[in-house]
Image 1 (cartoon, one colour):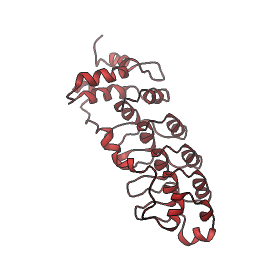
Image 2 (cartoon, rainbow, N blue to C red):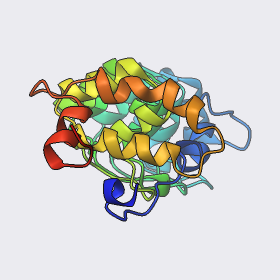
Image 3 (tube, rainbow, N blue to C red):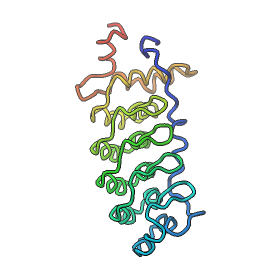
Length: 241
């Protein structure tokens, strides 16, 4: 096992790494005032009043350091997102949990909001809570449409969060087969799969169950070159022929 892992630090469970990111869906309006409440409600008519934006500021932060754009993205108000983007609001500000508006939209799986932000060059590689990027969140969801949009706009497939997990590793640990295959076809490295499987078994009280559940990772999934994790393990000598 040590040879296979190369003495790497064991990644943290994906549930631990993503748990604080799970509170963004349909943000409540309690405690919101003025511009932030209008954005959270999707009240575009009120936002269109230019005096309103000039008086309060389109990048004004609430107590959680969220901009109106954060709230519109979290609640899926694409028309408000489009309006705020056209008003030249800042796209990459992060709230007090390190999440950008793009991350909010990805977490809540609001594809139109994600598309608008990416088209206007929102950064897909910002690191949020525990180092997770927007692509980590899309892979863990799992949502292949969002993942494809992010990759097409430069999201790094091999980005690692604080636990050393790439988006591919998160997909494997959650047993999301379709997402695993999708990321591989987009160019994610297959060697990560071998490490992920080994780590999921290390220290597990249910080794046989976990192995049975994830053995498809080693033998069935192939990268863009057509190789499986077993092929790479054979070539590198990690397992015997």
